[in-house]
Image (cartoon, rainbow, N blue to C red; front, side):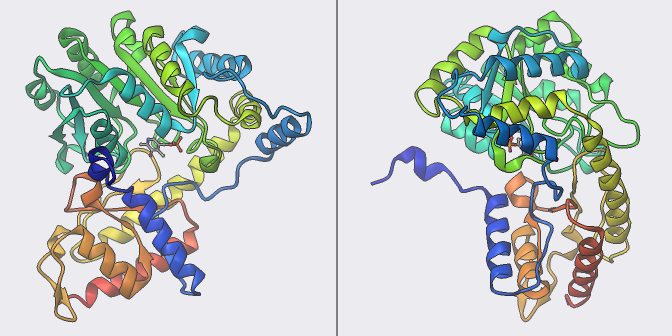
Length: 396
Ligand SMILES: *Cc1c(COP(=O)(O)O)cnc(C)c1O
């Protein structure tokens, strides 16, 4: 019999839709895939070269659990340069992707019954990870009319003596929402006043548009810095999703606990990817900027095209490579006698009848929406939206 813990976990819906789309493609079906949560660009050559060189030089043994000193130094330099944060090596730990970093951070801080505030729509893994730590998720809904930014008043109301942590994700997956400096400052003040941790997932910090500013909450003062667990990684900014490199910067007590956990599970992350991480952080950053310029064109195009479809409305995201259109006006309509009653039905309909993959909003706690990733070519976007428009027009 499998454990109660395992029974409670639902597999990642984003990975599931990607797998389904890939299986259809393998059968020769021409699927337009808006499901993938990863950039479509290749990992830059200088980063690959660093890994190859390291492998060839025999850097293939265990490394320190929390990461090589070189990689930790590159992370410290990056946090200082980009985020205005000062950390010591004892306050940094590298793990197998930011997802693993977040998992370890939650397991190292959340006790059974502790409350963790999760602004909704949320990234699919947060509730599952909090559940694995037997924490209690407290969902605070952010309205579309407020660009999916949760208000400070709502957050304040959600705080109780049991609040242990707030998970902040700006720019946000799935909504693309980006909190302003003022909003982040209000959240920091609340956390300091009430004394809870802020797990700040900053993986999309570089994928941000229209001159918006990414603000690391830990940079707003010593008190909030002590309470902040900053998570980041290489997957999204450097197109390195398969490499599995992520890190946490936090108070050394937390990092020490995470290191103990990791020493009995993963040990260290892959040895020869660590020099590649150093190359990514210390090398030319224009690769990221070029990618963002391309994403920006696609963002404007996909939003315009989606809004031109009767029954779909889509707000302009401020960051990431996702759009989160509202499709609820189509609920109650049907095809072949089957009624569309929610985002799962809608995503299934699109995949099966239009060969377009997207992720249902239900997995993000927002059933009136679907998430489309525009980390795919302009040509594929045009084709995919044509198909969506056609399939929507067929609904009765
Ligand atoms: C992709 C993603 C991550 C995890 O990235 P890794 O590949 O594990 O480094 C974490 N948070 C959010 C919001 C993401 O979208």
